[in-house]
Length: 72
Image (cartoon, rainbow, N blue to C red; front, top):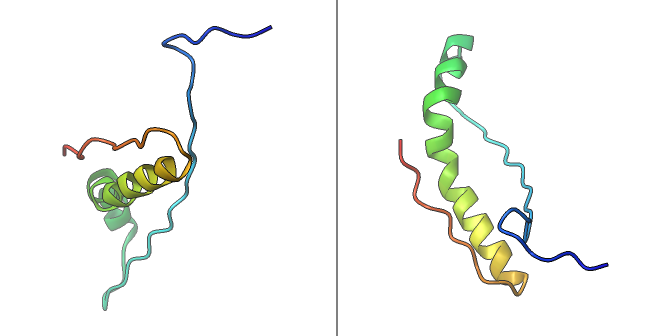
């Protein structure tokens, strides 16, 4: 039995994990990380995710997907 494509069906699923390393002369506090993960983390990692998704889909021989720019 073949399933008909619908707007709700998934064409492709990509999973990726990034490791973010922060370096400073000063010790990071828990408060810093709470603020960082809510405000800066997405802004700093989004370009890497966009590039990864674009390049991965291009290599899969499917139409390459470009994620939108991150809007803070």
